[in-house]
Amino acid sequence: KNEVEQSPQNLTAQEGEFITINCSYSVGISALHWLQQHPGGGIVSLFMLSSGKKKHGRLIATINIQEKHSSLHITASHPRDSAVYICAALVPARQLTFGSGTQLTVLP
Amino acid sequence: KAGVTQTPRYLIKTRGQQVTLSCSPISGHRSVSWYQQTPGQGLQFLFEYFSETQRNKGNFPGRFSGRQFSNSRSEMNVSTLELGDSALYLCASSLQGLGAKNIQYFGAGTRLSVL
Image (cartoon, rainbow over all chains, first blue to last red; front, side):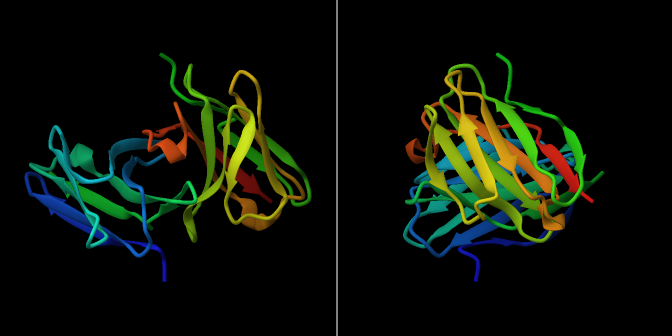
């Protein structure tokens, strides 16, 4: 079993919909990253969380340390949000352990 | 401020050869970490360098090695290439490194194909 599990693996939404991507982890972590990867490979760091909630524009990330769970929400989704979203847990060994990613497609 | 630069962007090698990939971090960043991404295994941590010292290493064989220079630029070397080493290799830089919970800034990656 992977230490970091993401769901769903694939997600198709209509423009304007509210989107949620989930990330669960089975080990103790010191922080959790949410990353966005566009076709071609470039990765952008969206959030780094160690507690609570962060918001940037239409993106919101939350983490519940006790439940070992994090969510990434996209409000008013847009086709340009289409990408792979990856969560990555920073484990105490100072390594990043990655989820398998969620392929999001937003249709116009 | 220039971003993280990886060179080359694409590389084709044959089995048994060796390869060296380069990563120039954002100015002022002292940490460089390396990752391998394949369709089967996803993203996996290779190693992290901070101020010329390897601070941590993932679960990869000794054929994968790296180093960091005094200007924080880093190189990754893979010797005796195998078909399974075909992957996108990404590096990321940050101010204080993974342990300080810094934001990681990623390069565009080097796509390595081993024939």
